[in-house]
Length: 159
Image (cartoon, rainbow, N blue to C red; front, side):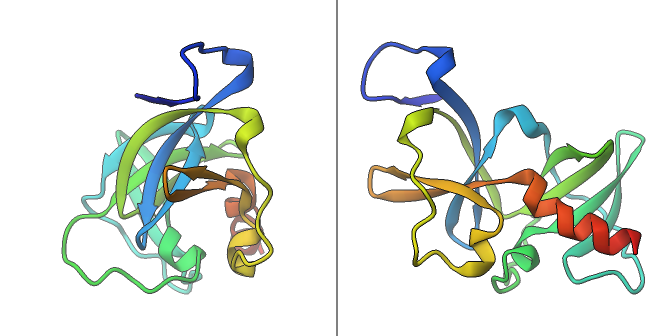
């Protein structure tokens, strides 16, 4: 785990941990409190007539999990390589979901007050699912709001 605090003191009240993931070359941070699992995708069963964001369902240790294609959800081009993508397991409103991502990075512990508001030039499709950004040594980490990522999809699936 990396600590990017600017000092040696770790105060849990003033820090938050993120699982970092890469999607189309962009780093995103998922609050670790929302992450239940990280796993390699093996087999997905497609769901007929589902939205493009819903890749299908999978069996994860005996649980049926809805797989969400984060590239489609974030409106970025599909993967071109044949490598197995990874997924991050999260729960939303009592249901399990697997967010399909390209790769998982490291866990970062960051200062809560170092998060910046979404910049005006952040893509509007991302702005609706981002809680803010962190500037990290020349890199930008967009903090994903898991509730916002899944809210509209869950509503459309229920309709």
